[in-house]
Length: 324
Image (tube, rainbow, N blue to C red; front, side, top):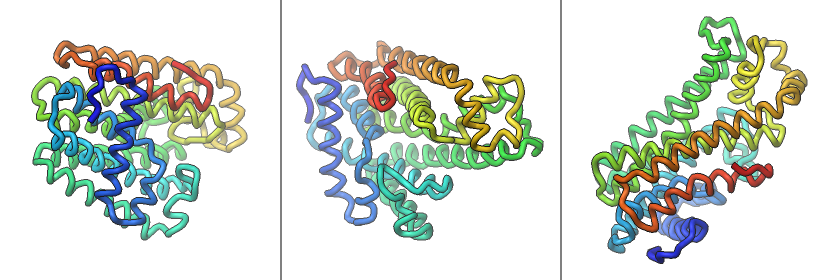
């Protein structure tokens, strides 16, 4: 366990990842799943464990500590299963620097392995009690809803005359935010709540830590999109709302050609970058405000809770030489 009063945020993340890797190999025996899990950042289970340590103030038993780490495996399985399925939906061929699972093993097996990961995760959650099991199911339902909305959203932007009204730039940007809230931020929210539940926390602290996680999740997705855009990637669910927000008219079908999109992105590159940085900072500030709540008990882990949002986001943005 990590009970050093002088522990840094870097060391906390490193040590917790070590606990998680050990527990993954103790818990998961399926070679395909282990392969898929390789090279993951483990951000969601790490902040879940930080939430747990914040609630116990480092005074938990070794059994409680072990259960918190095990609970993190359920979170990681759900997250990674969503990536397997996302790669199929989006037609992505690479994941974490190597061929995506469905490219190597085929779509049918990838779909089934994704479902198997969810099943293992649910069984872990169920073994930790009804509260955590219900949180797992409810959160996965929210993630799925976000996934479905994104599929519908991308289809609607490819055809502006479908009656949805999404050609309105304000509606499109709001829809983009709604999708990332459900698809990404909900899992960060659940991770923090689950960690607190492992410490048997109840009441308002669950809501505060949940919203803290949600703000990190929103900042994380925005940072992830910014990195992709800075690297020149074309992301339908990102570029359409950005361009419609920055211009006085909707993006019509003819402008969806890659060369036209690149010209528009180049034209607005600094505006887009500044817009993202502004939004990321707003969510980081809100997460840090929540972490300072008087309802959260004072300890070294509360201090780490305050440092974690910027640490997570800046670790990602380092790739494109941006600091927020």
